[in-house]
Length: 195
Length: 122
Image (cartoon, rainbow over all chains, first blue to last red; front, side, top):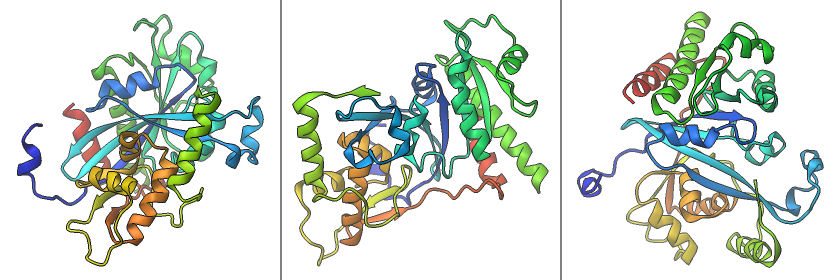
């Protein structure tokens, strides 16, 4: 990239779109973002302060000490005119209100599931189902191993047939790319059906 | 989630509060995480002289940059950066480019195909 700064004219800003990478705490969201992002994952932290304490969602917080909610994200430049952002959502769903525009305007989502504790991703699945946001499920194998076939995971998560379930490895770029492509293919198929 | 305890976090909160002039909410709703901002170059003649933190922002958005990236690079919460961007926008020192509109009811097939092609090249 060196040298490009001086040669490129002040171009029109690119259009931006986003996909969310969701799932339970420690399921591999940031790993997945890092695997496909062209930049090392970036992090922003939002202070969780007294300003927000009137909100019901904070009922689970035991202490009122200042805490922060972190959001990790990465970027894929599709073309000069279009940039895709990947946002790893905060693991604890009750903090999602901190990012109330996170789900708004997202193309869709990937819900990562840990084969060893699929129940930790129930809340994320529920979140997208309720809001009608399209999503696919990526089953992240521990050390890349997959003891159960995708259909068994689908049954365990009580997922309807139209939700795609893929076995993946969040550490591998190609694997994560394929999960994203599956999501986009589904969006394209849905769009064709609707038109 | 990371917990920050003791005087450090209190000090940080005070500092953030100072940056926004005590405000906790933005004056306008132009900014999402993936809204792109660009410094106006050269700045308008009648623009007020930017504060040091504003200068840091302007330097970072000499080329178009998304709000979330800006916040990450500045190591500031998005909420604080957005309030400061509101001031810069009102002073005519930045321009704002909204994200590509995405509505579930009217999917943009052309956009989706572009994203599909781009991912295929990875």
